Image (cartoon, rainbow, N blue to C red; front, top):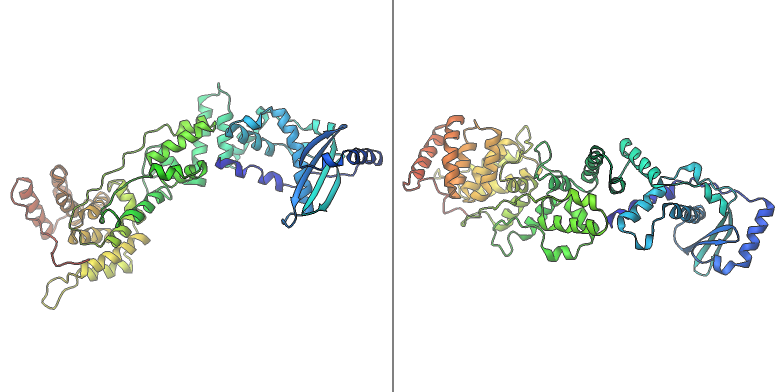
Length: 484
Protein backbone atom coordinates (compact mmCIF):
# COMPACT_ATOMS: atom_id res chain seq x y z
CA UNK A 1 0.00 0.00 0.00
CA UNK A 2 0.89 3.66 0.45
CA UNK A 3 3.06 2.89 3.37
CA UNK A 4 5.91 0.80 1.95
CA UNK A 5 7.62 3.52 -0.05
CA UNK A 6 9.00 5.26 3.04
CA UNK A 7 10.43 2.40 5.02
CA UNK A 8 14.09 1.95 4.10
CA UNK A 9 15.30 5.37 2.98
CA UNK A 10 16.87 6.40 6.28
CA UNK A 11 18.33 2.96 6.75
CA UNK A 12 19.97 2.90 3.33
CA UNK A 13 21.43 6.37 3.65
CA UNK A 14 22.71 6.03 7.19
CA UNK A 15 26.13 4.77 6.10
CA UNK A 16 26.57 2.79 9.32
CA UNK A 17 28.22 -0.35 8.02
CA UNK A 18 31.90 -1.05 8.59
CA UNK A 19 33.70 -2.92 5.82
CA UNK A 20 36.95 -4.40 7.11
CA UNK A 21 39.52 -6.54 5.27
CA UNK A 22 39.69 -10.18 6.25
CA UNK A 23 42.82 -11.72 7.61
CA UNK A 24 44.83 -13.15 4.76
CA UNK A 25 43.91 -16.72 5.60
CA UNK A 26 40.20 -16.02 5.78
CA UNK A 27 40.41 -13.86 2.66
CA UNK A 28 41.92 -16.72 0.79
CA UNK A 29 39.22 -19.04 2.10
CA UNK A 30 36.28 -16.86 1.05
CA UNK A 31 37.96 -16.15 -2.30
CA UNK A 32 38.30 -19.87 -2.83
CA UNK A 33 34.65 -20.49 -1.99
CA UNK A 34 33.59 -17.72 -4.34
CA UNK A 35 35.72 -19.02 -7.23
CA UNK A 36 34.26 -22.48 -6.81
CA UNK A 37 30.66 -21.19 -6.92
CA UNK A 38 31.05 -17.91 -8.81
CA UNK A 39 28.18 -18.39 -11.24
CA UNK A 40 25.65 -19.15 -8.52
CA UNK A 41 26.93 -16.53 -6.07
CA UNK A 42 26.86 -13.83 -8.77
CA UNK A 43 23.10 -14.08 -9.10
CA UNK A 44 21.15 -11.33 -7.39
CA UNK A 45 20.15 -12.04 -3.80
CA UNK A 46 21.68 -13.67 -0.71
CA UNK A 47 23.32 -17.08 -0.66
CA UNK A 48 24.78 -19.35 2.05
CA UNK A 49 27.87 -21.29 1.05
CA UNK A 50 30.45 -23.14 3.18
CA UNK A 51 29.96 -21.03 6.33
CA UNK A 52 29.78 -17.69 4.54
CA UNK A 53 26.85 -15.48 3.62
CA UNK A 54 27.14 -13.87 0.19
CA UNK A 55 25.03 -10.97 -1.06
CA UNK A 56 24.92 -10.02 -4.73
CA UNK A 57 23.48 -6.74 -6.06
CA UNK A 58 23.08 -6.14 -9.80
CA UNK A 59 23.20 -2.46 -10.77
CA UNK A 60 22.12 -1.49 -14.34
CA UNK A 61 24.86 0.46 -16.08
CA UNK A 62 24.15 4.19 -16.25
CA UNK A 63 22.26 4.46 -12.96
CA UNK A 64 23.61 7.23 -10.77
CA UNK A 65 24.74 5.00 -7.90
CA UNK A 66 28.22 5.34 -6.35
CA UNK A 67 30.33 2.30 -5.52
CA UNK A 68 29.89 2.73 -1.77
CA UNK A 69 26.10 2.74 -2.05
CA UNK A 70 26.17 -0.48 -4.09
CA UNK A 71 28.21 -2.17 -1.40
CA UNK A 72 25.97 -0.87 1.37
CA UNK A 73 22.94 -2.24 -0.44
CA UNK A 74 24.58 -5.65 -0.64
CA UNK A 75 25.38 -5.51 3.08
CA UNK A 76 21.80 -4.50 3.83
CA UNK A 77 20.57 -7.64 2.09
CA UNK A 78 22.76 -9.72 4.41
CA UNK A 79 21.41 -8.02 7.50
CA UNK A 80 17.84 -8.38 6.27
CA UNK A 81 18.39 -12.10 5.99
CA UNK A 82 19.09 -12.27 9.71
CA UNK A 83 16.11 -10.05 10.58
CA UNK A 84 13.84 -12.10 8.35
CA UNK A 85 14.81 -15.22 10.23
CA UNK A 86 14.41 -13.74 13.71
CA UNK A 87 11.05 -12.11 13.07
CA UNK A 88 9.74 -15.25 11.45
CA UNK A 89 7.44 -13.36 9.08
CA UNK A 90 6.46 -15.26 5.94
CA UNK A 91 6.77 -12.33 3.56
CA UNK A 92 5.36 -14.03 0.43
CA UNK A 93 2.02 -14.61 2.17
CA UNK A 94 2.08 -11.82 4.74
CA UNK A 95 -0.49 -9.05 4.78
CA UNK A 96 0.64 -5.56 3.87
CA UNK A 97 0.65 -4.53 7.53
CA UNK A 98 2.90 -7.48 8.43
CA UNK A 99 5.27 -6.62 5.60
CA UNK A 100 5.33 -3.03 6.82
CA UNK A 101 6.22 -4.19 10.35
CA UNK A 102 8.98 -6.33 8.92
CA UNK A 103 10.41 -3.45 6.91
CA UNK A 104 10.15 -0.87 9.70
CA UNK A 105 11.84 -3.32 12.06
CA UNK A 106 15.02 -3.07 10.00
CA UNK A 107 15.32 0.62 10.77
CA UNK A 108 15.21 -0.16 14.49
CA UNK A 109 18.38 -2.30 14.41
CA UNK A 110 21.12 -0.34 16.17
CA UNK A 111 24.47 0.67 14.69
CA UNK A 112 26.40 -1.46 17.15
CA UNK A 113 24.68 -4.55 15.79
CA UNK A 114 25.33 -3.74 12.15
CA UNK A 115 29.09 -3.12 12.24
CA UNK A 116 29.94 -6.36 10.52
CA UNK A 117 33.49 -7.57 11.17
CA UNK A 118 35.34 -9.61 8.64
CA UNK A 119 33.29 -8.47 5.68
CA UNK A 120 34.88 -8.38 2.25
CA UNK A 121 33.91 -7.30 -1.26
CA UNK A 122 34.68 -10.33 -3.43
CA UNK A 123 33.47 -8.87 -6.70
CA UNK A 124 32.74 -5.40 -8.05
CA UNK A 125 32.96 -5.16 -11.81
CA UNK A 126 31.03 -4.17 -14.91
CA UNK A 127 29.65 -7.15 -16.80
CA UNK A 128 27.87 -6.25 -20.02
CA UNK A 129 25.27 -3.62 -19.24
CA UNK A 130 25.26 -4.03 -15.44
CA UNK A 131 27.61 -3.82 -12.47
CA UNK A 132 27.88 -6.93 -10.29
CA UNK A 133 28.67 -6.31 -6.61
CA UNK A 134 29.16 -9.29 -4.29
CA UNK A 135 30.05 -9.06 -0.58
CA UNK A 136 30.61 -11.89 1.89
CA UNK A 137 30.74 -12.27 5.65
CA UNK A 138 31.29 -15.27 7.93
CA UNK A 139 27.86 -16.58 8.81
CA UNK A 140 28.43 -16.29 12.54
CA UNK A 141 28.90 -12.53 12.20
CA UNK A 142 25.16 -12.15 11.61
CA UNK A 143 24.34 -14.03 14.81
CA UNK A 144 25.04 -10.88 16.83
CA UNK A 145 22.14 -9.07 15.21
CA UNK A 146 19.23 -9.44 17.61
CA UNK A 147 15.76 -8.19 16.82
CA UNK A 148 12.38 -9.19 18.25
CA UNK A 149 8.83 -7.92 18.07
CA UNK A 150 9.15 -6.49 21.58
CA UNK A 151 12.33 -4.60 20.72
CA UNK A 152 10.72 -3.18 17.57
CA UNK A 153 7.65 -2.04 19.53
CA UNK A 154 9.87 -0.34 22.13
CA UNK A 155 11.76 1.39 19.32
CA UNK A 156 8.56 2.64 17.65
CA UNK A 157 7.06 3.82 20.94
CA UNK A 158 10.19 5.82 21.68
CA UNK A 159 10.07 7.42 18.24
CA UNK A 160 6.43 8.32 18.76
CA UNK A 161 7.20 9.95 22.12
CA UNK A 162 10.15 11.81 20.61
CA UNK A 163 8.03 13.12 17.73
CA UNK A 164 10.18 11.50 15.04
CA UNK A 165 7.62 8.99 13.72
CA UNK A 166 5.79 9.12 10.42
CA UNK A 167 2.23 7.87 9.96
CA UNK A 168 3.43 4.49 8.65
CA UNK A 169 5.38 3.79 11.82
CA UNK A 170 2.44 4.87 13.97
CA UNK A 171 0.14 2.55 12.01
CA UNK A 172 2.58 -0.35 12.38
CA UNK A 173 2.81 0.31 16.12
CA UNK A 174 -0.97 0.44 16.53
CA UNK A 175 -1.50 -2.80 14.61
CA UNK A 176 1.34 -4.65 16.38
CA UNK A 177 0.52 -3.87 20.01
CA UNK A 178 -0.56 -6.97 21.99
CA UNK A 179 -4.25 -7.82 22.16
CA UNK A 180 -4.23 -7.35 25.95
CA UNK A 181 -2.64 -3.89 25.68
CA UNK A 182 -4.12 -1.24 27.97
CA UNK A 183 -6.87 0.76 26.30
CA UNK A 184 -5.30 4.03 27.42
CA UNK A 185 -2.05 3.16 25.66
CA UNK A 186 -3.86 2.23 22.46
CA UNK A 187 -5.87 5.47 22.59
CA UNK A 188 -2.68 7.48 22.95
CA UNK A 189 -1.22 5.79 19.87
CA UNK A 190 -4.47 6.42 17.97
CA UNK A 191 -4.40 10.12 18.85
CA UNK A 192 -0.80 10.39 17.69
CA UNK A 193 -1.61 8.54 14.48
CA UNK A 194 -4.52 10.87 13.69
CA UNK A 195 -2.28 13.89 14.26
CA UNK A 196 0.35 12.45 11.89
CA UNK A 197 -2.27 11.67 9.25
CA UNK A 198 -3.45 15.28 9.51
CA UNK A 199 0.09 16.51 9.01
CA UNK A 200 1.11 14.18 6.20
CA UNK A 201 -2.09 13.38 4.28
CA UNK A 202 -4.46 16.23 5.15
CA UNK A 203 -6.89 17.12 7.93
CA UNK A 204 -9.85 15.65 6.07
CA UNK A 205 -9.05 12.32 7.77
CA UNK A 206 -9.37 13.62 11.34
CA UNK A 207 -12.49 15.61 10.40
CA UNK A 208 -14.05 12.44 8.98
CA UNK A 209 -13.13 10.37 12.02
CA UNK A 210 -14.58 12.97 14.37
CA UNK A 211 -17.64 13.77 12.25
CA UNK A 212 -16.84 17.42 11.59
CA UNK A 213 -16.56 19.85 8.70
CA UNK A 214 -14.26 22.05 10.78
CA UNK A 215 -11.04 21.86 12.74
CA UNK A 216 -11.34 21.14 16.45
CA UNK A 217 -11.52 24.87 17.25
CA UNK A 218 -14.36 25.32 14.74
CA UNK A 219 -12.24 27.05 12.11
CA UNK A 220 -11.90 26.13 8.46
CA UNK A 221 -10.02 22.95 7.52
CA UNK A 222 -6.64 23.61 5.96
CA UNK A 223 -6.75 20.94 3.25
CA UNK A 224 -9.71 18.69 4.00
CA UNK A 225 -12.14 20.43 1.62
CA UNK A 226 -9.95 20.71 -1.47
CA UNK A 227 -11.63 17.70 -3.03
CA UNK A 228 -15.04 19.30 -2.63
CA UNK A 229 -13.76 22.51 -4.20
CA UNK A 230 -12.49 20.55 -7.19
CA UNK A 231 -15.83 18.80 -7.69
CA UNK A 232 -17.73 22.09 -7.46
CA UNK A 233 -15.41 23.80 -9.92
CA UNK A 234 -15.66 20.91 -12.39
CA UNK A 235 -19.41 20.32 -12.32
CA UNK A 236 -21.14 23.67 -11.86
CA UNK A 237 -22.03 25.24 -15.17
CA UNK A 238 -21.98 22.05 -17.23
CA UNK A 239 -24.92 19.68 -17.09
CA UNK A 240 -26.53 21.38 -14.11
CA UNK A 241 -27.36 24.74 -15.65
CA UNK A 242 -25.44 26.54 -12.92
CA UNK A 243 -27.04 24.74 -9.98
CA UNK A 244 -24.90 23.80 -7.00
CA UNK A 245 -24.86 20.11 -6.04
CA UNK A 246 -22.60 18.93 -3.23
CA UNK A 247 -21.96 15.46 -4.59
CA UNK A 248 -19.03 13.34 -3.47
CA UNK A 249 -16.89 10.86 -5.36
CA UNK A 250 -18.60 8.44 -7.72
CA UNK A 251 -18.03 4.67 -7.52
CA UNK A 252 -16.65 4.61 -11.05
CA UNK A 253 -14.03 7.17 -10.07
CA UNK A 254 -12.98 5.21 -6.99
CA UNK A 255 -12.59 2.00 -8.99
CA UNK A 256 -9.77 3.63 -10.92
CA UNK A 257 -7.87 4.67 -7.79
CA UNK A 258 -5.18 2.67 -6.02
CA UNK A 259 -5.41 2.10 -2.24
CA UNK A 260 -2.66 4.68 -1.75
CA UNK A 261 -4.57 7.28 -3.77
CA UNK A 262 -7.82 6.61 -1.89
CA UNK A 263 -6.20 7.09 1.51
CA UNK A 264 -4.45 10.26 0.38
CA UNK A 265 -7.65 11.58 -1.19
CA UNK A 266 -9.60 11.18 2.05
CA UNK A 267 -7.18 13.68 3.58
CA UNK A 268 -8.56 16.28 1.15
CA UNK A 269 -12.13 15.04 0.76
CA UNK A 270 -13.57 15.03 4.28
CA UNK A 271 -16.74 13.06 5.00
CA UNK A 272 -17.17 11.63 1.53
CA UNK A 273 -19.14 8.45 2.30
CA UNK A 274 -18.11 6.42 -0.76
CA UNK A 275 -14.45 7.25 -0.28
CA UNK A 276 -14.65 6.49 3.44
CA UNK A 277 -16.13 3.03 2.75
CA UNK A 278 -13.50 2.32 0.12
CA UNK A 279 -10.58 3.23 2.39
CA UNK A 280 -12.03 1.25 5.29
CA UNK A 281 -12.48 -1.86 3.12
CA UNK A 282 -8.99 -1.59 1.67
CA UNK A 283 -7.36 -1.19 5.08
CA UNK A 284 -9.16 -4.24 6.46
CA UNK A 285 -8.22 -6.32 3.44
CA UNK A 286 -4.56 -5.40 3.85
CA UNK A 287 -4.45 -6.30 7.56
CA UNK A 288 -4.70 -2.78 9.01
CA UNK A 289 -7.74 -3.66 11.11
CA UNK A 290 -7.12 -1.28 14.02
CA UNK A 291 -6.48 1.62 11.66
CA UNK A 292 -9.63 0.70 9.73
CA UNK A 293 -11.57 0.68 13.01
CA UNK A 294 -10.75 4.38 13.41
CA UNK A 295 -12.88 4.89 10.29
CA UNK A 296 -15.86 2.92 11.57
CA UNK A 297 -17.85 6.13 11.62
CA UNK A 298 -20.91 7.44 9.86
CA UNK A 299 -20.25 10.23 7.42
CA UNK A 300 -21.60 13.64 8.30
CA UNK A 301 -24.67 14.43 6.23
CA UNK A 302 -23.94 16.54 3.18
CA UNK A 303 -26.20 19.63 3.23
CA UNK A 304 -28.67 20.14 0.41
CA UNK A 305 -28.12 23.45 -1.35
CA UNK A 306 -31.39 25.06 -2.43
CA UNK A 307 -31.03 26.46 -5.92
CA UNK A 308 -33.54 29.15 -6.86
CA UNK A 309 -34.18 29.69 -10.53
CA UNK A 310 -33.55 33.10 -12.01
CA UNK A 311 -30.06 33.84 -10.70
CA UNK A 312 -28.47 36.71 -12.58
CA UNK A 313 -24.98 35.50 -11.73
CA UNK A 314 -23.28 33.90 -14.71
CA UNK A 315 -22.61 30.17 -14.51
CA UNK A 316 -18.86 30.71 -14.72
CA UNK A 317 -18.85 33.19 -11.85
CA UNK A 318 -21.23 31.05 -9.82
CA UNK A 319 -18.82 28.13 -10.16
CA UNK A 320 -15.91 30.30 -9.06
CA UNK A 321 -17.82 31.60 -6.04
CA UNK A 322 -18.94 28.13 -4.91
CA UNK A 323 -15.46 26.63 -5.34
CA UNK A 324 -13.74 29.43 -3.40
CA UNK A 325 -12.44 27.71 -0.23
CA UNK A 326 -14.40 29.89 2.18
CA UNK A 327 -17.66 29.48 0.25
CA UNK A 328 -17.22 25.70 -0.08
CA UNK A 329 -16.70 25.63 3.68
CA UNK A 330 -19.85 27.68 4.28
CA UNK A 331 -21.94 25.58 1.89
CA UNK A 332 -20.85 22.37 3.60
CA UNK A 333 -21.56 23.78 7.06
CA UNK A 334 -24.83 25.42 6.03
CA UNK A 335 -23.37 28.82 6.89
CA UNK A 336 -22.49 27.76 10.45
CA UNK A 337 -18.74 27.70 9.80
CA UNK A 338 -16.41 30.19 11.45
CA UNK A 339 -14.46 32.34 8.99
CA UNK A 340 -11.27 34.09 10.02
CA UNK A 341 -12.17 37.58 8.83
CA UNK A 342 -9.47 40.04 7.90
CA UNK A 343 -9.34 43.05 10.18
CA UNK A 344 -9.49 45.67 7.44
CA UNK A 345 -11.33 46.09 4.15
CA UNK A 346 -9.25 45.37 1.10
CA UNK A 347 -9.11 47.59 -1.95
CA UNK A 348 -11.21 44.96 -3.75
CA UNK A 349 -13.97 45.43 -1.20
CA UNK A 350 -13.81 49.22 -1.51
CA UNK A 351 -13.98 49.00 -5.30
CA UNK A 352 -16.90 46.57 -5.05
CA UNK A 353 -18.82 48.99 -2.83
CA UNK A 354 -18.32 51.75 -5.38
CA UNK A 355 -19.53 49.44 -8.16
CA UNK A 356 -22.56 48.28 -6.18
CA UNK A 357 -23.68 51.86 -5.54
CA UNK A 358 -22.96 53.08 -9.07
CA UNK A 359 -25.83 55.17 -10.51
CA UNK A 360 -27.04 56.14 -13.94
CA UNK A 361 -27.37 59.83 -14.97
CA UNK A 362 -31.06 59.76 -14.02
CA UNK A 363 -30.13 58.81 -10.44
CA UNK A 364 -31.24 55.16 -10.36
CA UNK A 365 -28.82 52.36 -9.59
CA UNK A 366 -26.77 51.19 -12.55
CA UNK A 367 -27.76 47.53 -13.27
CA UNK A 368 -24.17 46.73 -14.28
CA UNK A 369 -22.98 47.57 -10.76
CA UNK A 370 -23.90 44.40 -8.82
CA UNK A 371 -22.41 41.98 -11.41
CA UNK A 372 -19.18 44.01 -11.35
CA UNK A 373 -19.22 44.01 -7.55
CA UNK A 374 -19.77 40.23 -7.48
CA UNK A 375 -16.67 39.68 -9.62
CA UNK A 376 -14.56 41.80 -7.28
CA UNK A 377 -16.00 40.24 -4.12
CA UNK A 378 -15.30 36.70 -5.38
CA UNK A 379 -11.65 37.66 -5.76
CA UNK A 380 -11.71 39.20 -2.29
CA UNK A 381 -13.25 36.05 -0.81
CA UNK A 382 -10.55 33.99 -2.50
CA UNK A 383 -7.84 36.13 -0.93
CA UNK A 384 -9.48 36.21 2.52
CA UNK A 385 -12.31 38.65 3.06
CA UNK A 386 -13.13 41.13 5.79
CA UNK A 387 -16.45 41.07 7.65
CA UNK A 388 -17.60 44.12 5.70
CA UNK A 389 -16.85 42.30 2.44
CA UNK A 390 -19.01 39.33 3.44
CA UNK A 391 -21.92 41.63 4.32
CA UNK A 392 -21.61 43.40 0.99
CA UNK A 393 -21.30 40.11 -0.89
CA UNK A 394 -24.53 38.72 0.59
CA UNK A 395 -26.35 41.95 -0.33
CA UNK A 396 -24.89 41.84 -3.84
CA UNK A 397 -26.02 38.25 -4.40
CA UNK A 398 -29.50 39.11 -3.15
CA UNK A 399 -29.62 41.95 -5.67
CA UNK A 400 -28.64 39.42 -8.33
CA UNK A 401 -31.48 37.11 -7.25
CA UNK A 402 -29.10 34.39 -5.96
CA UNK A 403 -30.28 33.65 -2.40
CA UNK A 404 -28.69 30.17 -2.51
CA UNK A 405 -25.22 31.75 -2.40
CA UNK A 406 -26.28 34.77 -0.34
CA UNK A 407 -27.70 32.64 2.49
CA UNK A 408 -24.46 31.06 3.89
CA UNK A 409 -22.62 34.39 3.67
CA UNK A 410 -25.41 36.20 5.51
CA UNK A 411 -25.67 33.48 8.13
CA UNK A 412 -21.99 33.43 9.02
CA UNK A 413 -21.95 37.24 9.25
CA UNK A 414 -25.03 37.24 11.52
CA UNK A 415 -23.44 34.59 13.78
CA UNK A 416 -20.30 36.71 13.93
CA UNK A 417 -22.15 39.94 14.77
CA UNK A 418 -25.90 39.71 15.54
CA UNK A 419 -26.00 43.46 16.26
CA UNK A 420 -25.04 44.40 12.71
CA UNK A 421 -27.85 46.41 11.06
CA UNK A 422 -27.57 44.43 7.79
CA UNK A 423 -26.42 40.87 8.54
CA UNK A 424 -29.62 39.60 10.14
CA UNK A 425 -31.84 41.35 7.60
CA UNK A 426 -29.85 39.89 4.71
CA UNK A 427 -30.19 36.44 6.26
CA UNK A 428 -33.96 36.86 6.61
CA UNK A 429 -34.30 38.06 3.02
CA UNK A 430 -32.29 35.10 1.74
CA UNK A 431 -34.35 32.65 3.82
CA UNK A 432 -37.58 34.21 2.56
CA UNK A 433 -36.40 33.97 -1.05
CA UNK A 434 -35.65 30.28 -0.46
CA UNK A 435 -39.12 29.85 1.06
CA UNK A 436 -37.70 28.78 4.45
CA UNK A 437 -40.81 29.97 6.30
CA UNK A 438 -40.08 28.19 9.60
CA UNK A 439 -36.58 29.62 9.71
CA UNK A 440 -37.85 33.14 9.03
CA UNK A 441 -40.43 32.71 11.80
CA UNK A 442 -37.77 31.58 14.27
CA UNK A 443 -35.16 34.14 13.22
CA UNK A 444 -37.30 37.27 12.95
CA UNK A 445 -37.66 37.98 16.71
CA UNK A 446 -33.94 37.35 17.23
CA UNK A 447 -33.01 39.92 14.62
CA UNK A 448 -35.51 42.41 16.06
CA UNK A 449 -34.07 41.94 19.55
CA UNK A 450 -30.36 42.01 18.67
CA UNK A 451 -29.80 44.02 15.50
CA UNK A 452 -29.30 47.79 15.53
CA UNK A 453 -31.71 48.39 12.68
CA UNK A 454 -31.85 51.49 10.50
CA UNK A 455 -34.96 52.63 8.65
CA UNK A 456 -34.31 50.27 5.74
CA UNK A 457 -33.92 47.27 8.05
CA UNK A 458 -37.06 48.13 10.04
CA UNK A 459 -39.03 48.45 6.82
CA UNK A 460 -37.85 45.08 5.54
CA UNK A 461 -38.81 43.38 8.82
CA UNK A 462 -42.33 44.80 8.52
CA UNK A 463 -42.61 43.29 5.05
CA UNK A 464 -41.39 39.96 6.40
CA UNK A 465 -44.06 40.06 9.13
CA UNK A 466 -46.67 40.56 6.42
CA UNK A 467 -45.25 37.63 4.46
CA UNK A 468 -45.42 35.33 7.49
CA UNK A 469 -49.04 36.22 8.17
CA UNK A 470 -49.99 35.21 4.65
CA UNK A 471 -50.23 38.62 3.04
CA UNK A 472 -48.85 39.15 -0.43
CA UNK A 473 -45.00 39.04 -0.20
CA UNK A 474 -43.68 42.53 -0.74
CA UNK A 475 -39.92 42.09 -0.21
CA UNK A 476 -38.07 44.15 -2.78
CA UNK A 477 -37.29 41.93 -5.81
CA UNK A 478 -34.09 42.07 -7.79
CA UNK A 479 -34.31 44.50 -10.73
CA UNK A 480 -35.24 42.59 -13.88
CA UNK A 481 -32.88 44.72 -15.94
CA UNK A 482 -29.77 43.27 -14.29
CA UNK A 483 -27.59 41.12 -16.56
CA UNK A 484 -24.74 38.72 -15.68
